[in-house]
Amino acid sequence: MFKTVSKPMGVLETNCYIIWLPEGEIIIDPGMDAAEWVIENVQNPIAIFNTHGHFDHVWSNCELQTKLKIPLYTPKPDIFMLLNDPFGYGMDSSVPDFEVKEDEKFEIGGTEVEFLHFPGHTPGCSAIKIDGALFSGDFIFKNSIGRTDFPYSSPKDMKKSILKFLKIKENLKIYPGHGESTTVKAEQKSLPFWLNYL
Image (cartoon, rainbow, N blue to C red; front, side):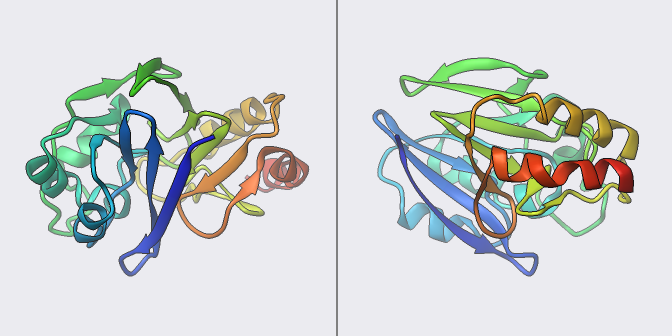
């Protein structure tokens, strides 16, 4: 099992994660003001992953790409948010080196990674599966789910994503984009409520 650290970043307290793998570190969702903390806590960074394209999860992409010279992986349906700053917050644009397809699986740093596609919060919203854990971004939180009332959100897609999540057999640990960690089994118990709510 890998070692990971996290820190809530920016006014929305978005969790930025650093994962230590045998071959180096992966950074997940470097949000507002994350670059300095990330640089202080990595020795051999190998990649940046975005769970989705919202500004509070991708704000420091460009700065870290420039300073660390490592590739950025982003779910393909959300790349437009990185390029165009659609919410008008003044975010620096970033260009992914890899456009990750739905449910794409690949190896990095000697470890298998899978971007499980759970649209609804955003078109490309994904939970990144690494070595027995899910980094769920804004899809699943402890006792909650991502909002579906934003531009580009879809309650219909979120319902489909919840049904897909309910089929997961492994009791993976969940590291969400906001708040504290949880597990697949714990969240599967509360999800029927959200299906009825949407």
